[in-house]
Each structure stands twice: as structure tokens, then as C-alpha cells.
Image (cartoon, rainbow, N blue to C red; front, side):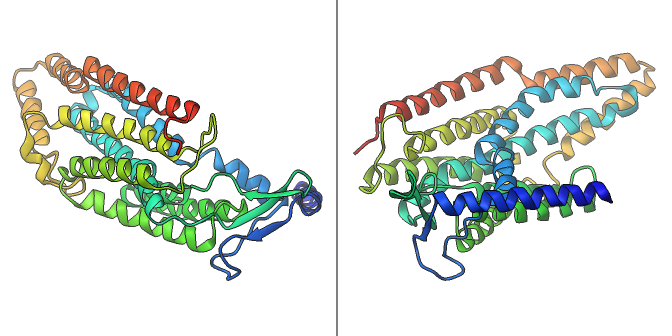
Length: 353
């Protein structure tokens, strides 16, 4: 109890000190209007410190890179999981996990490709314009673009819908994620209450749309997003960039396209020779039925022939074949090349007006 009291006292002192420093050096104006939904709610103290801590964990880039590493590590994880106790489900689990992660990466790309295009069409400033240089000049909080609320909602909706590990804890954690991410954006002055609300609702809607429509919509989405973003970001006269500007929207767009291309390449291989499955949605329950039947047949044959070792070898061979490491490296190489183009655009102002 004493430890809790001391911790609370220290947090209160830090909050008071930080808030006073913020008031002395920064003065913020509401960029849009002074209504509760649109005004600047920038805060200091422990709230700001906690919000800055959360920023590094859930944002579009972190989610996309994490999904990429999971795809690369998945074959290794499942090869080690092929054991006699779960042979019948090993291949099915690999198929499911690979497809779920690829689809999640596709949804994260909404916040890197589609969201950038939507911003160019329906641009609204961040809510805060605060003083800098000791109160001499005003500037926007961070860049004039952000998509963390949408990406947080997509991540939370994935947890809520899939509910991995524990049905109830996953759903509770998903709700907490949405609340924390939205609060973090508002506290730091990067978004208004209205902006995080719209962003979260759009993220949840896109999750439902992407997981309930046939898989071939992934390819349609990728084409539409690329064309829409490439056009809108070139014709928008309001977009101005500085040298070595990481807030270059076209650079962000190309960065997201690199991950979208990776998803498309991997799904083309995943469905190669079995294009009929593209008519099913991710959560239809019909994508892995044939694989289950094949695995059960193999298990029965291994029992009859008393050749469990051959069954295990066949399972491992299927995982290696499906992972197709050489092809995955090719898709990764394409991703890195397009990613590098994004960096060049940002560094050399190739899209400056």
C-alpha cells in the first residue's frame, strides 16, 4: 500500500511539473473550431508521458513490419510443431495462420495506402497549433497526416474477431486497445475526438468488409488503392514538402504499396492451382475444409500402414512446400526495392510542387 501511495505521489509531482513547463513554453490554439469534438485537447504530465510510450507500440508501420516478420518466421515455427500428437492439424494451422496474417497485413495497408488517398481528398487539419521557440511562432502538432486511430481499430477488431488464446480476454484487450490508442492521439494533440472516432469506426468497418467479402476482393482493393492514391496525391495542390521530409505523403503511400505488393504476391502463390477458393471469405470456414479432409486421410493411411514416421515426414514436406522459401525471399526483395523508392522520394523531395 505504501509503494502504491509513493508511486502515485511521484506521478502527481511529475504531472504537475510537466504541465507547468508545458504552459510556460507552449500555448495551443484549436485549428478547426472550439467544440468538444473538434477542439485541441493537448495535455501534459503523466498523461502525455504515457501517451508517448504507447505511440511506439501500435502504429501502422510497427503493425506492418510485425506481420512481415511473422510471415517469415511462420514456416520455422510450424516445422518445429510437427509432432505425433498433432500431425493432423499441423498443416491446417500453417495454412490458417499464414492466410490470417497476410490478410491482416492487407488491412493494415488500408492505413498506409487508402487512408493517405482519403486524406488528400478530405483533408482536415490536426486540432492543435502550438507555439514553439519559446512562444515566438506557431506550428501544427507533428505532421498534418495521421492514421494511428484507424490502424489501432483494425488491430483491435482482429483481436476481437479472432479472439486468440482466450475468447474473453482477447475481446476485453481489444476494447482497451481502441480506448488507449484514441486517448493517446487526443492527449498528444495529434487528433481531435471527432477524428479518432471517425478513424476507429472506419477501421472497424474496413475489417468487417475485408474479412466478410470473397478473397478476390484483396486484389481488387490493391489495384483501386494504388490508382486512387497515385492520382490524388499528384493532383492535390496543397501538398508541400521540405527537404528530407518524412511527412511526405507520397513517400508514405509508396511505403504502404510495398507491403500491399508483398501481400498480393504471397496470395497469388497461396491460391495458385486452387483459384476457386477465392470466392470464399476469410471467416467463411470453407477455405481449409479440403486440407482437413486430406490430412485425415493421410493419418488413416499412416495408421493402417503403421508408418507414423512417413506421415510426419510428409507433413514437414508439405509445410516446406507451402512456405516456398525462395518465392518468399523474392516477394521480400520486391518489397524492399519499393520501400527504398519510398525512402528516396522522402529524402529528395521527388514529389514536391
